[in-house]
Structures are given as structure tokens and as C-alpha cells.
Amino acid sequence: MDCCHSGTALDLPFFYQAKGTKEDMKMEKKKKKKKDKKDKKDKKDKKDDKDDDEDNDNQGTVVMFSGCEDHQVSADVVLDGSATGAVSFSLMTAMIANGMSLSYADLLMEIKKILEKRVRNVQYPQLTC
Image 1 (cartoon, rainbow, N blue to C red):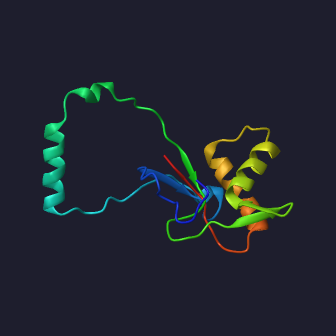
Image 2 (cartoon, rainbow, N blue to C red):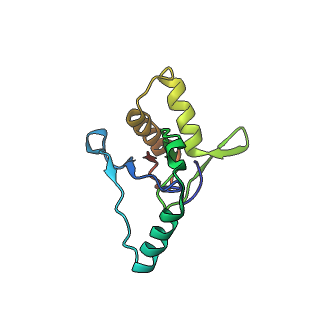
């Protein structure tokens, strides 16, 4: 997702941030916000209303690269007179340069390196899952 304020757009529980070096990078679990008693009660009521359809849920894997943190904006790069998302450009460039064979963590660091060379504003792409 290469758009402004996209860091936690899918509200996934774990994230990597491309700050520092690869050695500094670690997966972190998002901190949950405290909810008031009304929210907890509403949630309990909804849970009680559910059938046993939960057995049919597809437990797929969701992975998202976002262009920046929630409080940042995603920059564009101009190629042949057309603007395109800087992270999208960096992702494609990194994949092609590395023969489409990178781990998620390595891809995130490659995106960061390319962004540092091409974009003036500071933005930290994130990997959430």
C-alpha cells in the first residue's frame, strides 16, 4: 500500500520498521489500545450472537508493505514525466535487481536503501503481518 498515513492500514498485529540497519530490525507486536467497559460489553454481545460458523473461516496469511508510518506521507518519484509511488518503484527495482529472490526483511531493507537515494523527505516503509 503506497499511500500517505498507511503504516497500520490493515491493523495487523506484527510489524517491522525500516529504521536503522538490518541488524537493528526486529518484529514487534503492536500495542493494543485500552478500551472502555462499553466497548468490551458490545464486543461480548456480538460474540454471543455469532453461530458456529467460525469453523469455516479461512486462516490465510496476510502480509503488507506500507509506504510509510501512520504519521508520514508517501513520496512520489517522477519517471519519464509521470509520477509514481516511491515505495512501489523501490519495491519493483529491488525485486528485479535481486532476481525476484529476497526475504521479506531483506526486501524491506532494499526498499529503504533505494528510497534514501531517490527521495528527499523521510519516510519509513513498514512490513506488517
